[in-house]
Image (cartoon, rainbow, N blue to C red; front, side, top):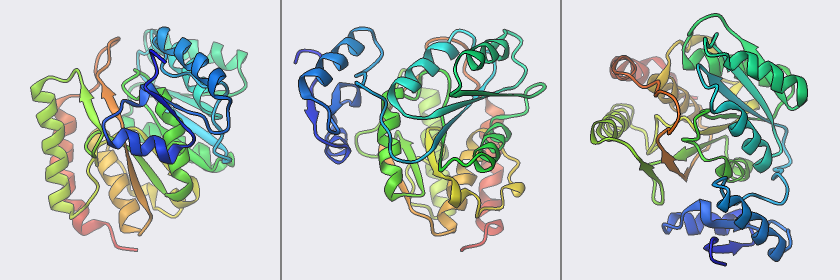
Length: 295
């Protein structure tokens, strides 16, 4: 197996390998599939730079929805949705904030051709946090059991979706974490790396949290647990939204699990990160410590 490090029978063994430093893009989780066929299919996917493609999308036995906020993601949307559906048995909800490049129109065409794709159109940029809240509301109203947060720019590896889904069977929130053993960031500048790590360290200290990657945007929530939160109180975006959601889940006593991922900086498009998002988190975090009740 030249292009695959090894095969494993299940996701528990895959997690053990990733935490030892093996790249998840070189692991084939058989999950009952024939080994030779699975390896051949995965090798083809790796050669196409699509990761270790599965023989069939993984089903965790729960009704899943990926919520994907978009703004000017025309060059990414079609291929990222294609790969999401190749790796996970799920529906995809695109929440587009009036992208001037035509992302919303493309999403509509994709939805017309594939019943697993849904679209919400919003006027103008309303923020990442409100996009996810719209997605959470959609998931609750339409009977989904697991709802995922995911970027459209391939910084969150589609092949890791089955790992998050499998972990969600024993957790209420699963975080694709850059800062637990086996996780990493790839392609970041020193400044951005320090901003992210510093923001996480600051938040963990102020909030007394043991979550290593509070600002991560690759997540899977149990929808029934989300419904126990008062989401009407959340108005933050970016870093601050992710911090607040994780902290609220933690304060409720829900089980939070971090699985390591390799986060790769976007190659196409423009990053949505800016200084205002970091400042929002800086001032919000101390308020959360006193504003969010326990239990």
